Amino acid sequence: MLYKLQFAELLPYWDVLLQGLVFTIVLTIVSTAAGVAVGTAGASARTFGPAWLGWIVVVYVELIRNTPFIVQLFFIFFGLPAAGVKLDETTAAFLAMVINLGAYSTEIIRAGIEAVPKGHIEAGVSLAMTKWEVLRHIVLNQAFRKIYPALSSQIIIVMLGSAVVSQISAQDLTYAANFVASRDFRNFEVYLVATLAYLVLAIVTRAVLRGLGRIFFKAAS
Amino acid sequence: MSLVSIREVRKSFGPLEVLKGVSLEVAKGDVVAIIGRSGSGKSTLLRCINGLETFQSGAILADGLEVGGMHTDVRELRRHVGMVFQQFNLFPHLTAAGNVMLAPTVVNKTSKKEAAEIAAEMLAKVGLSDKRDAYPSQLSGGQQQRVAIARSLAMRPKVLLCDEITSALDPELVNEVLRVVEQLAKEGMTLILVTHEMRFARDVGTNLVFMHHGKVHETGVPKEVFAAPKTPELQQFVGGIG
Ligand SMILES: Nc1ncnc2c1ncn2[C@@H]1O[C@H](COP(=O)(O)OP(=O)(O)OP(=O)(O)O)[C@@H](O)[C@H]1O
Ligand SMILES: [Mg+2]
Image (tube, rainbow over all chains, first blue to last red; front, side):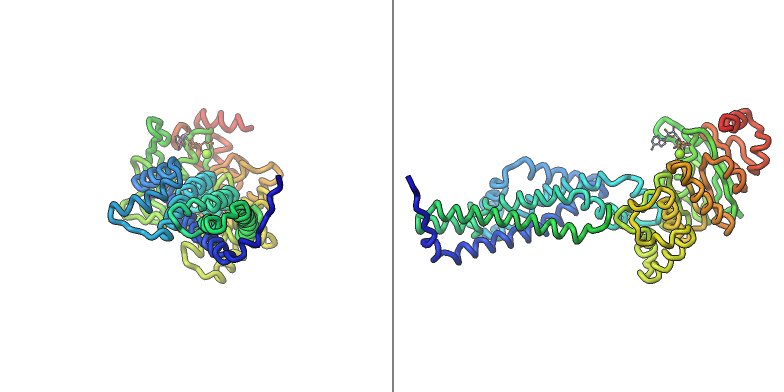
């Protein structure tokens, strides 16, 4: 049998889909920036900070890496209100994403830090730099170069995984697709469009990350 | 007065005592060559002087600062005591000039412009003015080590510690580095070098220190010590090298 594609029926909803797409893009950009910042702080604390702080980071990282993202999201959105912390769905979505990427990037960045030869740290310290100056000017720089591909992949994974936030009615691309499907019943067309949108988003994100990598790390290594 | 004064220093790694009461006086302008078998504690001694290693007893004074002392700012100490390593340890993400400029800008808060001038001066000193924009990966081992020397000099240390700085180099690159060190010695730089280059130790050194089993086993003027080593251990060591 032949299914007749009818994209025309989606047209009235183009703005809904577009808004969803924009939400997903903003969510990705913000959680990438904040998540990598959290990861940098976490990895730095674990490798250069005091032991007690390192342990807090370990607990955080293992907690997040060993539980499903959707459960983390539900905990923040449905669970925390019981403890008196009430967040709207958008805030909960952003928070969950940052916490999740923060944990994964902590691990990735830590691996990069540990790959920096100890001699470079000693050289920095011998030049009268403090531990934190060494971290900032010598270690992180090299660490990011090394783990940039792995971090990029994780960002894509998190971006695609962000579809889950539709489950708490955060109005991302998937939420928009669900909404349109429930209105016009053109499920095939709607989800085909959503699928292609994610695909393009992933490809574009990858290209952007590669470009940024070239700008930041243009030096010979 | 000594620039570096090492008194009865003892250092253990766990149960292993590596320095068993080392004493050494280094005056301004001295070129101290430390020789000795592998494992005799040469590197450990150097690393104690700039605070990379702690020690259990004894005392080290460097340019008037008590190393490991409660009231000593280790940063201040390391501004006076430079160190060059066997493995160069250049920062791969920075150019030759970038490597030299980093500590002056970060530690001394020197302006970029002034730091660039320092870098130019120091790279000229090591004969690498034309390599200022080269990354470490684009330099030979000998050139990398010379940049590492320039990087240490940029902090204008009072004394420079060199730990087997030619041991990782291909034989044909050793001399270009030794020539730079010799030039520094001529300019009056105080140097403490662990080395396997016996001829260099003899010709450039003002003091020779033979370490054996964590102690200064024999010491003196290099030419005299090499010509007539007193202890059988040094005789054997010098003989073994040939
Ligand atoms: N961080 C460390 N932990 C434990 N033992 C160490 C450590 N560093 C050095 N040692 C030990 O201390 C002893 C002296 O080491 P050191 O590096 O000072 O010797 P060295 O005279 O410099 O030898 P080489 O000529 O091989 O460089 C060796 O037995 C070594 O195994
Ligand atoms: Mg050694």
